[in-house]
Image 1 (cartoon, helix red, strand yellow):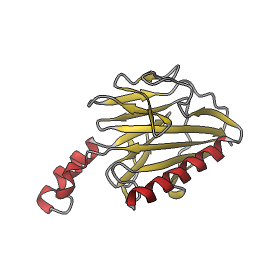
Image 2 (cartoon, one colour; image 1 turned 120 degrees about the vertical axis):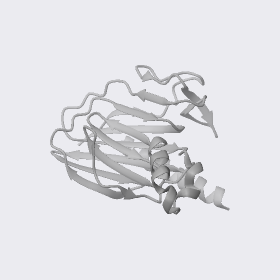
Image 3 (cartoon, one colour; image 1 turned 90 degrees about the horizontal axis):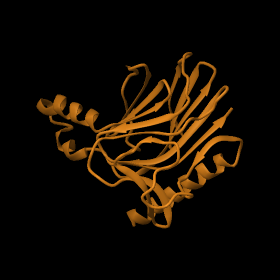
Length: 207
């Protein structure tokens, strides 16, 4: 039953991203035009990732245990934008049994941070870990927020909306951060992690 519910949720998320893509989009990638084993044209890195077909849908997925660092091709923006990513992240969650153990809390936090995926929207950064999220710019992170809706091996969709100096972050359509970052500039999206993740689609729209 859980598998069926998740499948329905993931279908809804895919439909949501597809709807966003029907507007005036600057960048759109769902990997459908690439063969299995390929990398998208113009992307940098991805030595341990490739396009694969899963349940009749093509996605970008790791094929080896390693560190991962991959950047999209150039995205041309002239103003405000909204970027939406549908993805999964296989957190290094083997340390979850330490989460509530006081003496192991610091070690758990360190290991959780090592397993987080950091998504760089140009100068703006979002770090998603095992049930938590951080945002910031130039390595200056905001306060940590718990994010139980993002759990290991579950799909989620992440959006960054920038209007002037105001940046808003959404996870599964729920707004989780609002902040003023006047110096945000984006010309690509970079993903970096020591734990596996999948990218299902990316949509960037100019607002």
